[in-house]
Image: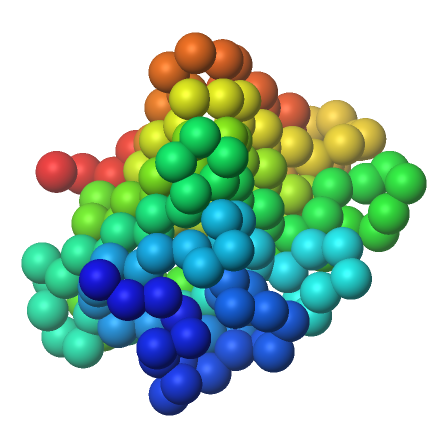
Length: 165
């Protein structure tokens, strides 16, 4: 297991130990040093996250935040702030079915963002694009699954594409 500080060659936007924006990560287990993972967001650099399997279609990523209080925040959702869409890219044979996010205190996926993997939480998971309506609304996408054990999964102008097994 490693935290992001132990991966100096992974790049990054420089906005803290658990900022995933701008990084290219090899397969592995990543523990949050601060308790929360961010990919862009309020006061942070807007850049995508790339997961590189290096040619191994069975490569696995596990992102684990602090038990009880850890969250995942991706991009921004308006209307009080402008939308900052963030993408999680899979390269080198990486597959969405092999990416796991343990975020017990919830996740917020912002306007127009695309995230991959299985989100597992005790609290709410929100995937939201505020304002607008189909077919012109910007869509927020999860290529994976969202599992909230004791709260709701809320989707506004959002799509979930369940990966093939």
